[in-house]
Length: 104
Image 1 (tube, rainbow, N blue to C red):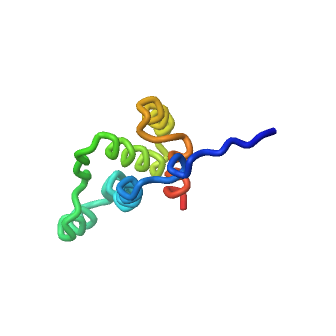
Image 2: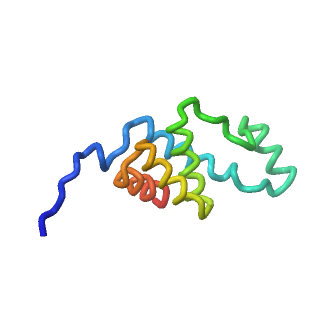
């Protein structure tokens, strides 16, 4: 059976997308409910918001949402993955890279 060679860019993320994945990992805790007034006060004092600001680029915002869904165990993450594939925002290989980055 012959193997299929994919271009390197089909299996890697651009720098901005990589940053978004790391941003989503950092923000994942914000999507969880606050435990109490102490935690909300600590977030406020640290300048952290309860909800992240949306990104200006819809493609990157979808990527951030996808990462957050993966991190929180949201079962709709694969629906969003299919949407990103259909819109040709990312390749299947790139989404696998994202899954690996989020898991690790």
